[in-house]
Each structure stands twice: as C-alpha cells, then as structure tokens.
Image 1: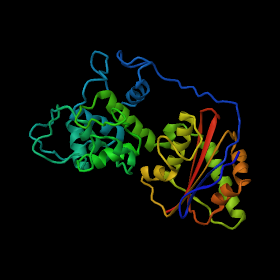
Image 2: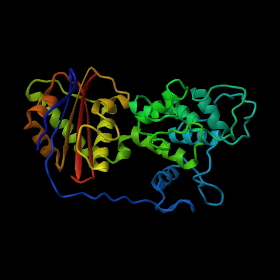
Image 3: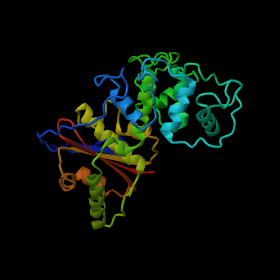
Image 4: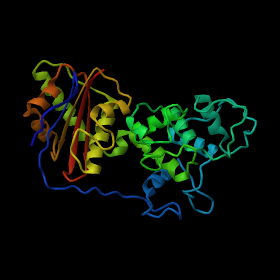
Length: 343
C-alpha cells in the first residue's frame, strides 16, 4: 500500500511506502543486575540508571542505594555532566567561587564547566544547593549544545515566553528530553531529582548517538550504496551522508516502532519538518521516505523505486545529503526512514 505525497511548502515533499508483513520482531534486551538496592528491575528508570551507572556517569550512596527521589545538587549535576561528556578536568583554571575550593566535592568538574562557559562566574556557586528544573534546563542546553524549537513548549502554562528559562525548556522539549511534570506543567522551580537528572542525560546521549539506538547499521550502509547506484544510472551526483540526518532518520524509525504507528506525523516529533528543526538541521529543500516490513535493503529499495513519488525523492537533483535510519521492533517488525535535504 502506497500513500500519496504530502507537501509542507514549496520544495518539501514527504512520502511513504509500506509493505504489509505480519511477522513481528520481538527485541530482547540483556541488562546487568541492578546496581542499587532501591532501583528494582520494574522501576520506571531502571534502564537509564543502570546504563549510566555501568558507564560511570552516575554513582550511588555508600549504603548501596541510588536515592532516586533525592534532589540533585549543583555540584552533583556538574559531575554527572562532565562524566557524560568525557571532559578532561586536569589543569582547569580555578573558578574562584568563595564557597568552592580544591577540597570541595566536584571542584574539578565545576572548574571544567566554568572554563567551558556552561556555568557563569559569580561570587558563589552554592555547590550543595539543590538544582531547580529551570537551572538544569539551562545547564543541559549549554553543556550538550542542544538546538531546535517546538511549539509543544507552549503547552506548559508555567513556562511563559518572557521568562529567562523559556528558550532552554523549549530546546529540551524540541529534543524530547522532557515531557514536563504533567501535560501542562514543567514545574521550573521544583528541585530536579537524581532519577530525573539520570533520565535527562540518558535521553540526550541516546539522541546524540545513533549507535546507542541499535539501528541496523549494516543495512543502512547498504541502502546508501543502492541509493547512489540508482542516482548514478541517471547521471545524478551521489548523496553525501549527513550525521545529523542519520540521527534524525533513526529517531523517526525508532519512534514508529516504539509507538506502533506508520505516518509522517510523529506523536513525539511532529512533522518531518519539526523533526529536522528539533535536531538543529537547516535546509532549503527536504524530503522523507518511510517504509515498514521490508527485511532487506534490496526489498525496501525496490519498493521505493517502484513508486513514482518515492523514486523522485531518491533521484531528485534538489537534494545533496541523506540520512538513513532502520530500526527493528513494532507491529511491522522493522521500520525504514530516508531523510533528504539541500542545506
């Protein structure tokens, strides 16, 4: 079954193809035993906490607990972020806070983030003070260089546009890092808990690293080869692989699998246009092909090339870059996304 192309504006067409296949793929995940006595396997953030702990990004208490609902302090947030980014801390200038010295827990990480410009220089740092959700939004956006914007932030009644934290919360929402404390609240002045901080960092790392999404990398590379072979047949220049597009395409395929839908409009990211915007990708022309159920690169490419609209996207001279995301899961077993742009 093939749908009809849809158009968002002059040069942007998003079209899809699906092959109906009822064999479902069930993904299995092998996780290590819980590291913390207060984080059981059925805890909502067990995966996030366990994976970050295995990487040394978060640490527990001396009694073997993680204390997930305990507020995270400003010093602890600095330590988590520096470990997540792998930032060297040796030889950083003294940030000269009156309440932070070399014996302060987190001193090296605080100094590193001040040197990066994530934390501003001031008289005091307040290392033991709980970090608010508004403060953490600014810190995460600066540290991980998050880009993008989404109208979804306007659903939060407590994040007015004239507040200093609005652009930072906007970027978190655009990158699907937060969904708020309710559909209509972000609770900017509430303390960030240790589990919330872990979830934020885990989502950012997953969004910024396509390999963390467990995409079908070999098949994705094969599709790229087949695309450029088809373009060569008609004298079109090869499309260059775009890292940001690759991540965005994989996010879209994973989203379709996880939420069991097949559509250009994502309940998580919005339209393909919104998805690209949330990833900080600029373009003058863009297109999307999606497919589901095809088990090989040859099969999905055959389906797309036999559909005039999808074939047009693949061969279009309007596009110079491509991202390919293939992810297993969901009711069709496997989902494919191609994203095309001209910067």
